[in-house]
Image 1 (tube, rainbow, N blue to C red):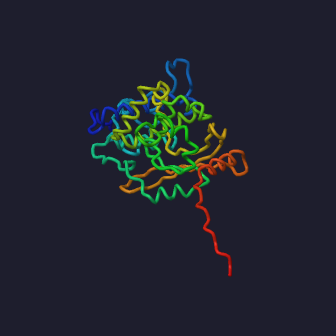
Image 2: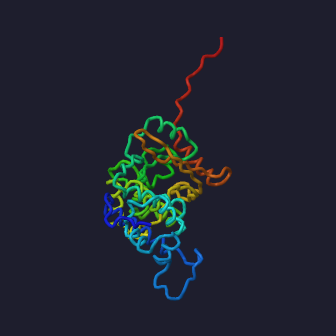
Image 3: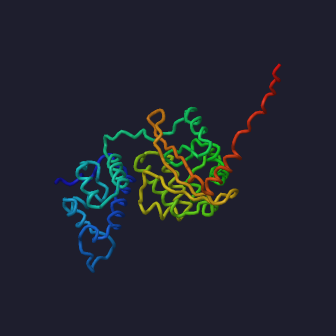
Length: 309
């Protein structure tokens, strides 16, 4: 097998470092026993050695070493699949590796997946119509770009946070890492923070040329040691759904599940529609219903009717 080019064309320094750090981090997390290798006593660092990954993928050690240095632009999908299998990557990690490879190719067209677009009025109407479920639309940088009244009531601490500033929209990463109150608001702060960083990391693989995304990561890396540490772990998550537990300042603990759905928009953009629900008959459902009653529009007074003649 031919090794990848020593000096690939089209791959930025940042892209090569992302590839290198991602592959090294996955190799370090993979215990030898998981792939049928003896642990041994002379391992100076955790995880597999480069030559072991190379053997599992069916390539030479020199070839894999160059790949791990970020020279990925000319690598075939078959070889990437072999490396993904050797490192036991999950589906999200595999997708991220392929996105990094596409970004490194000279002829790669810049993705139009998550560009800034105006949210159509019909999308806002749809979100507003969900009166009993908090719902919002977010972009790849995890800005909330559309929301219904119940979502704004549920996430009032984030919408009112100084991290929103003059931008006009709440941003999950800024609130998590730059507002001290987020640790009290999110009952599972660390789990949520790690998931937020992993979703942001996946977006960086899809959109390596997004200047606003790079600026957000730079801002958080400068201001938050927690973000710096989690970003350096290179964990990725694409499908973000599950459970959410919030300590709401007005109604108390609210436990919900949420689903994330792709929402195609004009100009080939795709944002995410997130919908929260609470299990019927639970205290959390009652608390959501209470919040919904506070946000319900006031009906106009009924017009008097004439008595029948």
